[in-house]
Image (cartoon, rainbow, N blue to C red; front, side, top):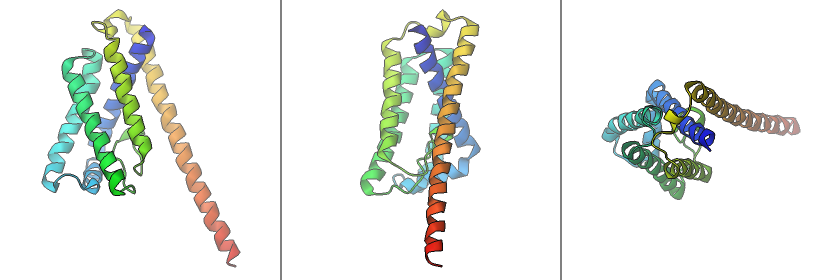
Length: 187
């Protein structure tokens, strides 16, 4: 059980770190993504994106340094509830042909209910960690074990990203093949 707790905690820490870095690296793209949601006023987009970025960095660092605390739990649930609500609002509006703006391996080119289920799963994992929270699970794991578990968590995210990219490329190949076959039929 200790392995599972450390794995999920490190998985979430890495995940939030990667999404924060992606938001920082592609700052202008994320501003555009937030505008396309058409929920908040344009003047609030940059300050809110900055707060989201700080919140994600705080969660990623604090999970490793202090474990689960009241502070990172509040920030975690606030961010995930905000992100999930924004996706849901746009799904209800029919505004699905926009990028979710999640960043990193979580990014998706269009909105779908899968994003909502994914966010709920992430919240359930965090809730699982809260429920089984010892004083700090990292202090009960040797440094080497923590590194190995962290590498396993990172590998899991990498495999997820590769599978996601493979599916996207496969979909693109199918679209191109169908266009080629349409053009041959017209000759």
